[in-house]
Image 1: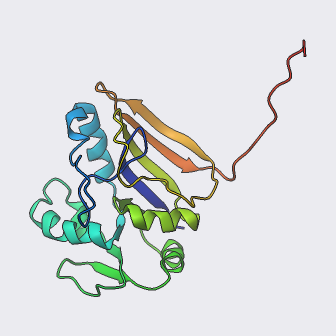
Image 2 (image 1 turned 45 degrees about the vertical axis):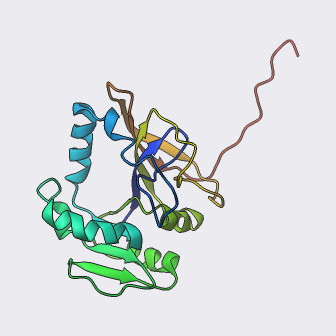
Image 3 (image 1 turned 180 degrees about the vertical axis):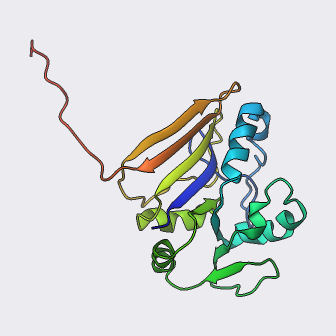
Length: 200
């Protein structure tokens, strides 16, 4: 079965938004660039070298389809990957291969996971991700956690996220403090009573 992997830059307080959306007043675009270094660059290149398909929200796709065709030397796989786009308003694009998903997104993604092909990576697309989290469709998180807080902006996890356990499968800390970490789903949340001290 194909995995859904959320790949995000994230602040300590969980913000993944990087630019203003529909005049929402977000003013911290580019907040992660001051922390970039050779280590994070190497991790990004390793992640982008994977043969994957993409699942994107419409707003993310709208900006990508004008940018990446002229900058794909940095990410050749973005041109050959099938771009699955969650949208009830768009149906066509000159940037191919692209498939638009309308209607019940959760069910469409379940069908994609059961189909043949590479894993499917999600970038940005904060609103769409909430639907995936609520339906328990995200199998892994590839995060770069940047040592900054913004206090505003769209977050990776918002209201309605189901309880879920994850395990770390790789991690490293870059010189400027970015934590590069991969989490994979690890079943349900486990709880336990605190240990009882002998003198109690």
